[in-house]
Image 1 (cartoon, each protein chain N blue to C red):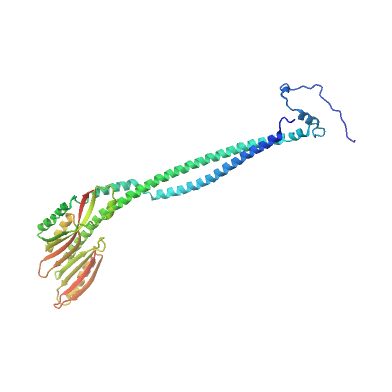
Image 2: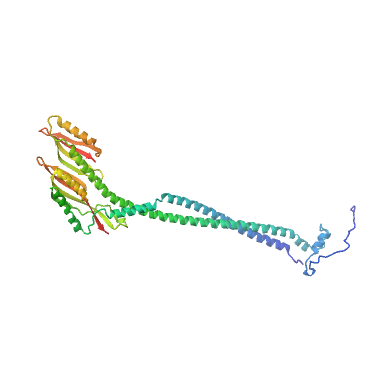
Length: 187
Length: 222
């Protein structure tokens, strides 16, 4: 009679140890594989972070600049809420010409906004800026014409084109002035 | 048989260890056999028990080795597990940082894009006025530098829709005796070419009328 079967104990101990060793091998190999994959992902992530950081500019400075520009846009021109108001404002051309003894023969406003269409993508502005071409025909002395041009600039018109014609034996000139006028419209 | 026989000497008294509980049915027969017959020649134990006894030593060694393996394996596995968890945490942290930087980048480029549009709007007006001022200054320069014998018939200023290629074309006439017309025209060209605000001055056309008046066309690139 065998009270303790050492052979069976030995075999079962070997089996248990083998199971443990197999389990350890399995967990460690999978851990090492996962760890290598994680290392690779961390490296990639660090590279991506470096790239993203190098592309990142000074946010505070850009935001401050942007706020200034947005405020500047709102004072870029006079605000006319209706087209009638805008057309009426062109009366200043007659007034300026009269001050310089010039005769305005024709004013042709073209209500076609030539400002960039990208303006629609500005979200934070309170106004839209519109730029209209405008043709004015004026007759008078060349010297007075020069002063008139200066006054036009002072009144917020930019000279787009000029066609100055003089006639023989005539001290006066006929000028076709192409202008740009600017208008703010509340959003 | 040629072997020396010596008398087996037993101790006078045999004292049993009082700590051993003889009622536990422990099997000490093996020990007696080992004591009396180390080489197992006279072992009277059954073969089955003797075979069983052979596994005692390997079993103990296996237990020790197994315990060591399990201890070391546990230690190694635990370390690997901690290392893995640390790397997972590190990766998660990196991902979060990258997400934050990406969001900042998106915000930055959004604002920068809107800033560029604002600059474009403001710049458009500034450029219009720059060109306007430039043409007025050139017109003033032209009128002040023209001698009395040169009369302007026409002055046309144009530029492209995008504000590029500003060009001033002047048509005029020179009334001077004889060859002085050409000299006056050349003098005008030199004067204009000396001007820093004119990029290019070119004589497009010139012809002498029957009355000796020289008609000319000049292109001035601003």
